[in-house]
Amino acid sequence: MILNPYRYSAAGGTGFLLDDYTGASAGYSLRALSASYQDTDPVIQARKGTSTLASFTASQVFDGTLETWAAGGDAFVRIWFDQSGNGETAVNTTITDQPQIVSSGTLDPKGLSFNGTSQYLDCGFAAGSATGQSMMVVAQTSDLAANRILVDGRDTNDDGSALFFLGGVDDTMRFSVDLNGTSSGADVFTSALSANTEYLFSGFFGDGDNTVFLDGTQADTDPNAPATINTTTNYFIGRAAFSSVAFWQGSIQEVIIYPDDQSANQAGIDGNITTHYGI
Image (cartoon, rainbow, N blue to C red; front, side):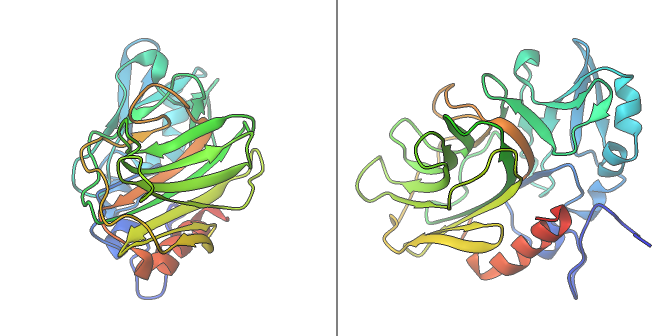
């Protein structure tokens, strides 16, 4: 018997990822990452039509409540609520630029769907520390031909951190930390990806190291990362932070950002995520 299909409980833990591994800057998901988001606090605010809005808990997303509300039509995400307790809601108020979650009355099983041309969410906050940063993202792309931004917190000088896909080059995901676009930047890469395949991408920066994991396994590391990165540019989900270019095409299930190097907890955090999504 499945007591709670929306979380995974490791030995000695609650199963709610952000309750077990505290201190995140923000956490976005359709599942409950913290206990209160299961049945009390909403994980998304959705829109149908031009202006009808409603908020849904993790349980309501998956138990048919959201699909019933969509009434056979489409629904889009206006707000992806932050489950860390910091109130860093990811928002897009422009209706043509909001990612889709329900199509013709059916929930997208792969999460929020991004069209690759205009849809994104603004997280409203920048990196919480100049000396450490971690991010974990569950996503897939349908386009291997172009560069696609997954999560980005860089300024116009490429100063900051980002996860982005190098389509048409080597089809890898890059975790980049950079200092003013100088040679002190450090980029690490996964192996080549396949289209329409869901992956967990995890990047860890701190103490001069930059490391990326793919599906819980280390893919690349660079021990010569810069000492500090930009902390003034907001993170964006689904497009570049510094301009409206390189939009994500595909789906995103989950985005978690920490203001420090969480590599010591990599196995536990990635294990929670890969077990939940069957990656």
